[in-house]
Length: 241
Image 1 (spheres, one colour):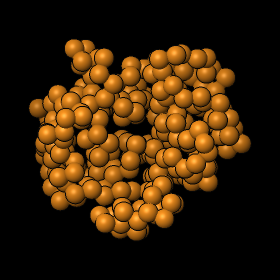
Image 2 (cartoon, helix red, strand yellow):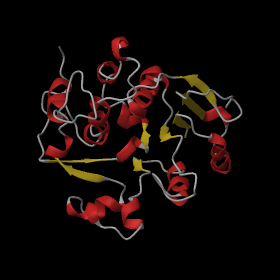
Image 3 (spheres, rainbow, N blue to C red):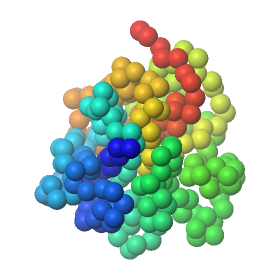
């Protein structure tokens, strides 16, 4: 079974990726999308591809899928370069869960709820314990509305239901959204291929506009973050325009 580790990196020291070498990974099956301001040579760790610092790591997830759509590995593992904090405390995940993810053959979330690890149970207000244990977070739909958010610019969509209507003809409209924060996950090829390359190109198109290319993020990147698990966990019909 072929596997590829796909890293979205912004100014992180990636030498820690060497820990994957005991679990079947090397420079031969690691791809690094580097959007760093200070470029470094990571060729000893993986194939390095320059990427614009826009759209969050969602941009790099979509780019990898599009660029490799006809030749995807059986398992793609998407992570951020700052998966672990410099102080060795849990940031997005634990080393134990990450190593487990490197060997998973099914869809798997790498995210670990740091709040619970610190004895803070705030996320249980909206999320079932089973979901948190499986690396997923739930939010009420109004928490995913960025229309009046002054910290995030939106260019095309500010509400997740509007994005789903643009992409799908039969999208349900839940009152809460379950998703994987920061899009650190393991995805089998068969799940990605549930949808056409056209759909992934549509999603990528709202993350990049040359007129705003200096803006590193946007509300749409957060909407897409809340879309991946939803679309891969449902059988939706793509809207053809």
